[in-house]
Length: 290
Image 1 (cartoon, rainbow, N blue to C red):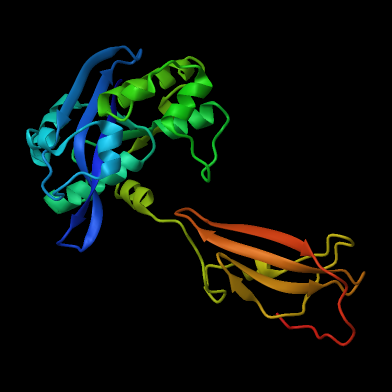
Image 2 (image 1 turned 180 degrees about the vertical axis):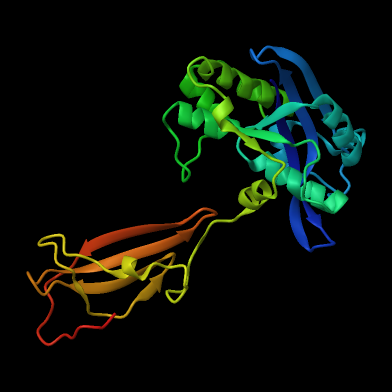
């Protein structure tokens, strides 16, 4: 099995047709490796901007690229055609799914179709490295440089943020882990529509307690002192991403605030609950019904 480790650089550009900003791709860089992770080829091309009229200062700073250099590049369609030939019959690998999101955006803008023509099998290197290192955490994903540092991989920060250099650094990280952690379990079938549905799904917090997706049993809270189900004594209030209400245990008299949030991901609704102790209830306060 052959792999292509792809890295992209992009520039924020205002897309007038849809009145929004997109990440317009300005550079393709990649290394091709065989099943033993030996480099068998490299790919690099600058892409002439067709949407953005100027480069963001941050992009100039990180990449060292200028608009004049990019004007000498090739159109996006030509870059895709050349890369498709380079990556034929290979598993595409990227650090995180950010580059895949950028490709989907650019394919949609230039070709009117979100499907990436050269993407048939895919591996997220970031997920592979994090899980192999026992550091996987969706809420705090690790950057490429941070991963390299943790693995003791030497690199020059000044050479990063150019596509081929980042692709090579990704390969070095993989090489540190591959002997004990096979890549195959992390390869996804990217030809299925479900791949695009999953990768483009935006996780969000549910903001309405009447939403039928919510398991109403999750609105129940139990006393941490005696284990009895507590009674809610105030109405639910939404605060930021969560819902909060006051509860009272009729068994031991303890009182607390219950906080719960419901985050919708592609596969499930993640529930997070917290209990915050409060002072004892005042005499005469009533109990609200569920």
